[in-house]
Amino acid sequence: MIDYIENDAEIAMPIDEFFNEDGTPITKKKYGKVLLKYLVKELREHF
Image (cartoon, rainbow, N blue to C red; front, side):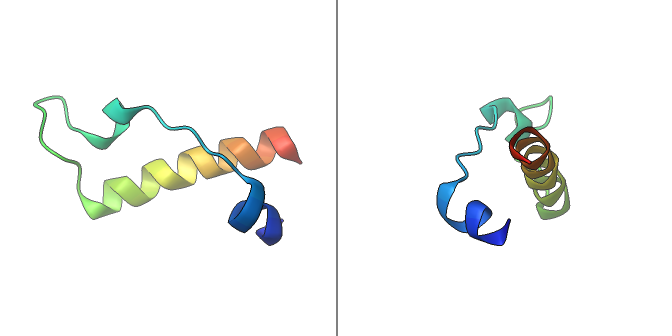
């Protein structure tokens, strides 16, 4: 699974996930949550 994440996974994330409603960039904590959200989605689809 780690090999898949490091080498094969192409995880697409909508750009609007990286900005708040007012257009400001999200915090590092929110960024981490967005990345985890899409990583989990990709892993569920692949495995």
